[in-house]
Image 1: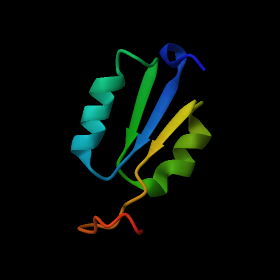
Image 2: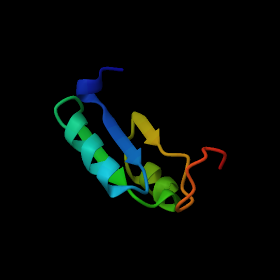
Image 3: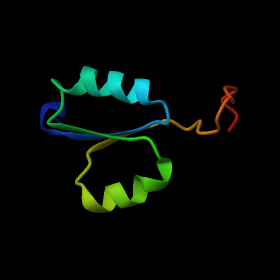
Image 4: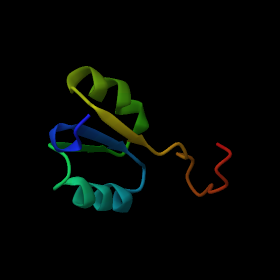
Length: 68
């Protein structure tokens, strides 16, 4: 996969992370799609040809142990 031609989907509940990743990847990927709600992941994947998904696995508010 050549990143310059890729569509990247970033899913994270932290809007600051979404903004930072979008800014970082905007010159490296063809398209960067961001989503705050992980429940929309299936819907987004059905409607977009996505090459790479960056997924935050810790979606419980105020819990930072990584055990979720």
